[in-house]
Image (cartoon, rainbow, N blue to C red; front, side, top):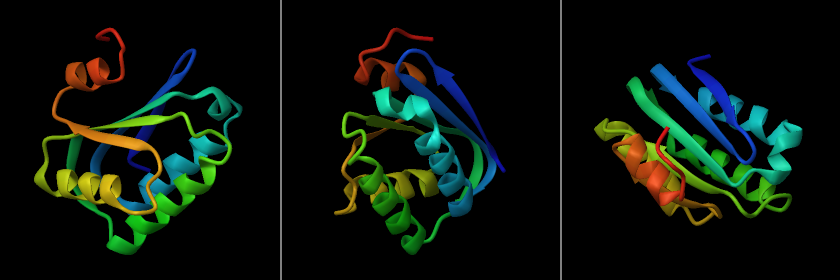
Length: 125
């Protein structure tokens, strides 16, 4: 898998992706977080794609990710998602997720960690 999960107690998590990321990588990372007991009190997710060289996520995979997140929102609807990337393909995929009709979590795309953290109301890390 081309990701690592970094929990930021008490209410956050960073998913750092690297190399070429697939839809399956994103699905597995989401599943791990949503299955974790800390998910119930989670308030933000930062998806850091700055270390990515490319992405292969189909429209069907984006729809599946949005649908799974929508289901998870029945348990915790209070999460905001910051997508961190400067790669054109990943920006397009992130915007497709953010604008999908199934997406329930407020989602924004940023090119810097400082901007993402400011939007989330966090101090710079």
